[in-house]
Length: 112
Length: 115
Image (tube, rainbow over all chains, first blue to last red):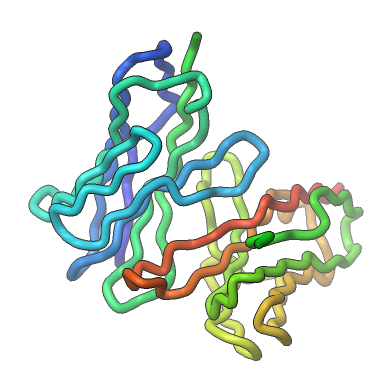
């Protein structure tokens, strides 16, 4: 079945450092791919998405590119801020379906 | 637009007690979901609904029941609470959207403790 694997955390960075959180997936066809973010004490919210191969999703300085050949959707940000401290979830929606499969989440701590 | 709201925000139950969690959305979404979030386990789907009057089991449905009598509301019930049901519960809703992506919109969560 479809699945998502993302790097384990926590990831601890200093402010203005470069961020990469790796995500790979297993799915048939062409799933839609997502990154959700969960700030402390809140629900998840969509950060960015990509619905077809080679699409780049971007929002709030974060980017991720849908790579069909490597089945990956890595999250990147050039310069993190303390306010980016949160848990990040990679997710996919399979072709023809409506349910979303979530990765286990990666906690990011950014130090001032 | 309130989006997705959940009540209550916090609750403490004794083993064997029952309760109902209410989820409401004002986005006219067809699909609604209940998840639980436990440390180190990510999100696990409990039940979901594809429209008013329909419900279906997710991956961890035991001990829970749901109802979707109105399109905007999705209720999660615990008939006889157990300590293993201590968790944070999230409701979400989705629709195909213009891109057909079914991105999900989440409520703020309900933190439940069963003693």
